[in-house]
Length: 486
Image (cartoon, rainbow, N blue to C red):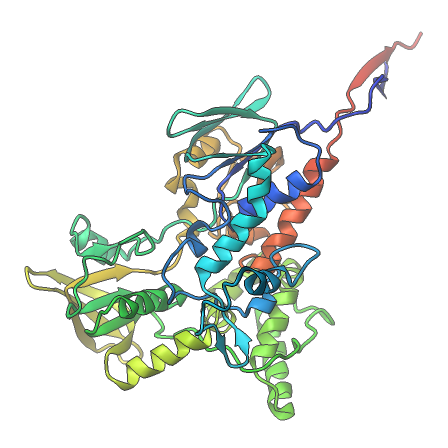
């Protein structure tokens, strides 16, 4: 028997199969996706639906703040947020008057804008499409996602129900999970703060309360800046496994240095050797070491894809923390604050692991087995704030709609523990390892497949690729003719 499949003729111009797209999350990633889809003009009103409980799209957890002390850790001219218009944000800062209202923005010869300004910029990018009805912003959190009659059905926590042909998961970073020793002793204690990014989360901390911050990355420094901006004066202690703080940005404008795609490293060790060699080169040339890490960032996705799975694991195990301390750098304003607070003895850091926790009425005491000597130091404060970084390994368990998709076999955890498993086309991988059509993973949750997918330019580029895939899906149907051999 011979079976031939032929396209079914049509009398009208084919329209996209994807007649409605639901985007889960309306931060930078979700807003960028919605805007790019709307720009193509192929969708009727309300056919691009964004589930986002915040009042505006574009800010999300990273940028939705009114605190003027919280700044972008990248200079404004490097915030290539709009594909095809790399200077859009810098131009908007000037044209909107926001730059003139921010006298502290310029540092080391560059503009480090307030995060709230970037959120306002992104909201302005997508608002015209909300106003004309092309994009529908549902101020709800997606609670359930499942298949119904061949389409995706999404249910919100306030009662919305939307059927869509494609779903893009764009929720960004999940919350941190505290060290088990802390959680077992302090869960339920109002002095134990697990989400300092929530509005007014730090408001109850008094000016003379000592604070212990568990974590030492950029979010920990955000806590320091926000506390000091609010009038806090007491000692702050940063606890982390390595004690490494983010490195500062360099002055001046410089090009990335290092071509890691010539003889692409295929082991963690060979990658480390290439980085060290590039660092020696820039040192001899009098260039900043930051130029090497900028090159690593730009070439990061190609480097990651070239590494076998076990070597990717070695990179994460042995090199990740050192890379992140140099990749995610603090803006000059925060670097000055850290230096000033350390010199005054109001900011300390300690490397080690939590050995014991004692919760008393007046304060919480934490014993740290320090590195490298193993001696025990006691640190105490009236408040303990957890900023250990997003728990990407448990992102599916952290949201009911993702857990449901996993239960149905449509989602799986990334084997590196970096988020949700997807293929190079950003399609979610099912339980059987095959890509799920019309279910995409965008932004940081797709890092397991791409390696470098945290910065604004990289996310914008991935969003553009996803949009092109969605737009390229035609509605050409097929019919099957069966020819029986005589």
